[in-house]
Length: 100
Image (cartoon, rainbow, N blue to C red; front, side, top):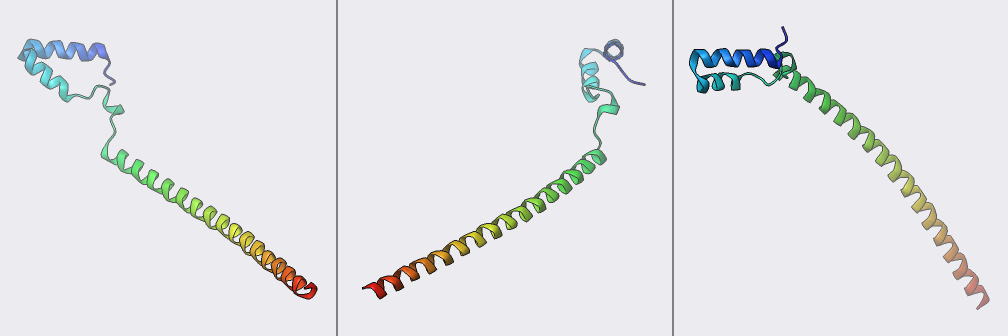
């Protein structure tokens, strides 16, 4: 049975009549502000934690793979560029030595 605000108010009034306003307020403060179906249990939180951890690990693995792929591509580009530069400078030095 879902408890709505009207029912909660009726229960509060009944508690006030039985035990007074302070005890009624204390008892009502122990109840959740919504129905028990809306309250998360420890099992719900554990399942959520497991799901978030799994998602985090998956995302980290994808990022790591992407990073290594991009790093490899950047390294190849840099090596080819430096190798080409060395050959060009070597060729220019050889040409200067032949002309001079």
